[in-house]
Amino acid sequence: MSVQGMNHFTVLSDDLEVTKNFYCDLLGLEPGPLHEHRAGVIDHMAFTATDLQGTVAKLEKAGVTYELRRLPKGGVGEGLWQLFFDDPHGGKVEFDFDKSEPAPASYAA
Image (cartoon, rainbow, N blue to C red):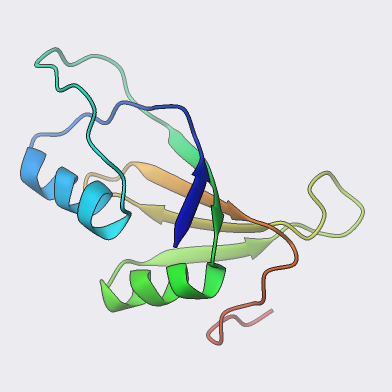
């Protein structure tokens, strides 16, 4: 899996180790500065990514439930793959993949 873009986001957590394991070990991201101040909530965070098949396989292996959608023809982002899943605290994560990426074997249109 290869995340291709996002500037930054802040995740609120009551269990720092579980959160770091999810974002760093599973998704391959790196932690930024850690603050003790807690404020606000995240609705979702979206990333541009590559390797849809590998990403789905990694999530399945880790037991992470996900939803995979393909944007309909004729609209903005036609054919774009959208993969949604939750972090360990219920934060929504969205990975967007190019329409040319092949569907994972488990995908049922």
